[in-house]
Length: 170
Image (cartoon, rainbow, N blue to C red; front, side, top):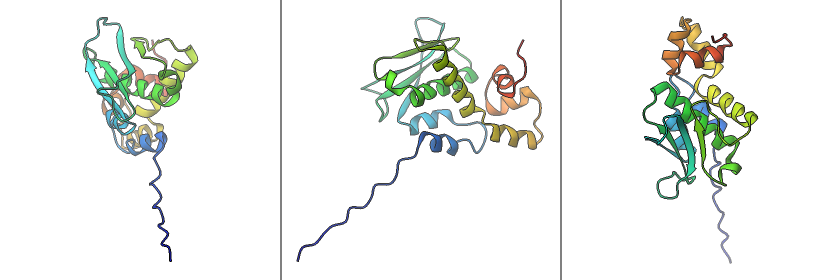
């Protein structure tokens, strides 16, 4: 008589959307935890040029399980760093095939070697990660209606919050 062993099926991997949603239940969204759960390490560093906000790069020594790290400009304000991490996470999710070919450096205007459409897509996803409409609406329902207070609660810049809410930025 032979014994057949059944293999226990592996637990299904969470999708990037499921990982992001898990951290969007309360403000502020923990964008570094999202990066870590996606297998990407996050570092602060001083860049040679202050015009660089961040980059995502292959990091075989210190990268997370994915082999990638995100570096953000240590000299920038906290809200800017958070948006940069979210922007680079967006590139990791949306443009990973292109990342396999080399580093992706974003300047202070979130421009890189990618097309304008790819940069816009990364900005939109970064905004959705940090300022999901459901969480923003929840805060408004709790009585936080001032743009500056919403921005502070979500730890983003007032400008980013205005853009997200569709308010004209001067």
